Every structure is written in C-alpha cells, then in structure tokens.
Image (cartoon, rainbow, N blue to C red; front, side, top):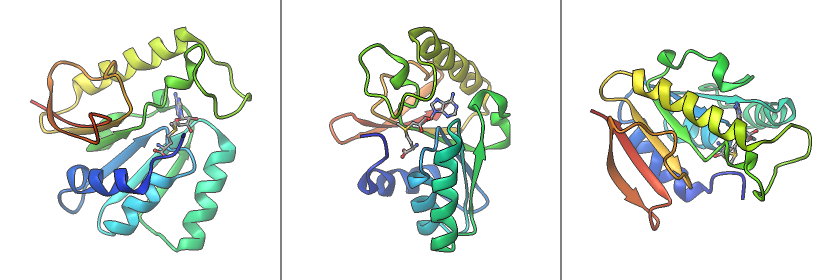
Length: 168
Ligand SMILES: C[S@@+](CC[C@H](N)C(=O)[O-])C[C@H]1O[C@@H](n2cnc3c(N)ncnc32)[C@H](O)[C@@H]1O
C-alpha cells in the first residue's frame, strides 16, 4: 500500500529520466523502492530520495549497499528543507495523504493532521510553479492538489492512477 509497485516505476522511469545527467527527486522516498529501481534501470541518472522517517532512510540505505547501487542517495529530512531547483524532475506517490482523517498510516510515530496535508500540498504547488519550463512530474494515486495549472497532463496510465505531467 505505501511503496510503489515495480510496474509503476518501470513506466515512470523513461518519462522522468529521458537522458543522462538528469537529477530525479522522489518526494517522500519511504524505503527507497523508487530510487533503487530507477537507479538500477538508469545507471547514468542520479536518483535522490528525501524522507522524513529516519528508520526508512536506514532501510533504504541498507538495501542500496546490499545491491551495490552507486547512483541513488537518500536524504533524511522534510522536503520543505530542500531547494527543489537542485533537481530536474520529480516523483510523488501521494506522500501527504496519510495526514488525512481516516487514511492508512505507515506508523504512529509522527503527528498527522488535515492542516499538514494542506500545508505540504500548497508548499509543493508553489515550488513546482517556480520550476523551469520542461520540468516533469510523475504522480501516483494523487488527486493533483499539488500540481499547478502551468503543468500539462502529458500521459495517464493504469486507470488514471499514474499521471505524467510537464511544465509549459
Ligand atoms: C506513500 S509513501 C511512498 C514511498 C516511495 N516514494 C515509494 O513510492 O515507494 C510516502 C512517504 O513520504 C514520506 N513523507 C510524507 N511527508 C513527507 C515530508 N513532508 N517530507 C519528507 N517525507 C515525507 C512518508 O514518511 C512516506 O515514507
């Protein structure tokens, strides 16, 4: 439920990493599934994951070392602490959803609230709005609250669960 299936990642990678020297950020990287699979399929592309839960960063880093993958890096922290301009394209698996009342939670170790969902969604919306033309975003299981209207929906897959966006 909380980590991206491999078939979704396989569909996303050619879109977010169309050529070398690209930096892709997974906003809320969990146990690192997206970054590790992406880095495996595209060794010339740098995959970054930012994750607020330290224990998930530890799992991701353990897996990265066991797999011997050099082009994935995991950053412990809140995505609001990053400068998104340091990255080219973004992956987002509805990371803020667990804040909403009634949503399944990963654990009970952080504070959840509807206000946090709104705060993070608006924050990401504002950051994405400032990104250069051509910035690509892939959203999985998202309602699109965080996508500004300057992004065009380029493709949808899997009954609209996966949406591929590009900034115009
Ligand atoms: C649905 S999981 C997706 C994990 C991974 N992207 C994947 O596709 O397998 C969302 C993750 O986002 C993290 N997250 C939620 N809000 C965050 C924030 N503000 N900053 C950093 N990480 C966050 C959660 O802790 C959780 O691990």
